[in-house]
Image (cartoon, rainbow, N blue to C red):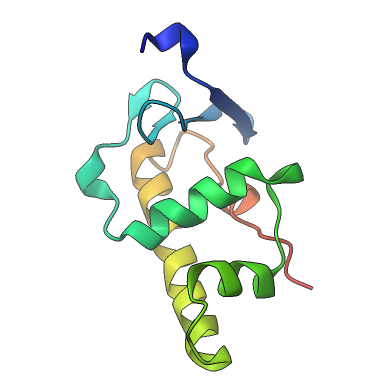
Length: 115
């Protein structure tokens, strides 16, 4: 499958940086032109969280929806703690790829509409 046929979602993340996510033909994420290596994603749930938010309307989901999808068997408190840790790891991955001077603000993409 060629790169022209990949579905790529682009998000403005701050004034200078762009987050680009490829979901077809394998999961890949770029901050500006820098590809985040596969080994940077410490857990599959971190990737799953980014994928879910990339695919949802306005890239936003309620906390309870995320917990039910990612940890369906877990108790509420356990799922809440897992979500908090997973969000933290996702922000770290995106921030490390973007460098501190790039204007990248991963919280803007990883906000997940907590009500």
